[in-house]
Amino acid sequence: MTAAIDFYFDFSSPYGYFASTRIDDLAQKYGRNVAWHPILLGVVFKTTGASPLPQLPLKGDYSWRDFERTARFHGIEYKRPTHFPLPTTHAARAMLWLQNHHGDDLAAVFARSVYRALFVDDINIAEPAEIMKLAEPLGVDVQALDAGATSYQIKDQLKAEIEVAMAKGVFGSPFVIVDGEPFWGFDRFDQVEAHLKSRRQTELRAVPNLDTKEKKPA
Image (cartoon, rainbow, N blue to C red):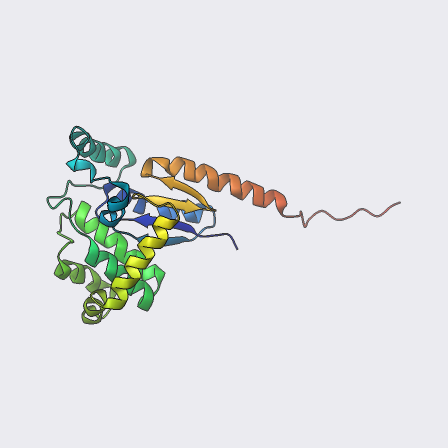
């Protein structure tokens, strides 16, 4: 079976949001599934020494301009959030709980709704109550979700999964690993597609032509 695309993201990442609107369609086009992995850039930055782009001198003003320009270029709905940067720990833990108890598909729906809440509806997703409101339409037990998201089990799981991600070389959001090949940034999605296309062509060439019958000697 063809390997899934590993998609790493932080809910506070604008480029991660843009990527979240494209990753599933891109994967489906080439017969792949997507494994969604929430991470916390704050944890990663302690190792890399990086900071959120809008907080950096000179780069900050440019980044805000580029967020809006990128959204326009790709036709993605976007509104500059009032609450930014902000912690996304509760959202990430809630997603892990949903993956554990309701499966990857519903968790991905939740992830997209959280991203939209921040970057379209300007909702403060750092507030646990707002995260629970976003989960309600999914038909899950929000009390169980809220309790699960604050449990030691989920806290330890998120910590462990971030450590695994960093061990694989993940250092930003969005970050895609496909067939062992790493790609950082939404602006690398053309390269991701080129890789998927090349791998698909290689796989098709390896499949024997079942319509070709061996000719018998006259």
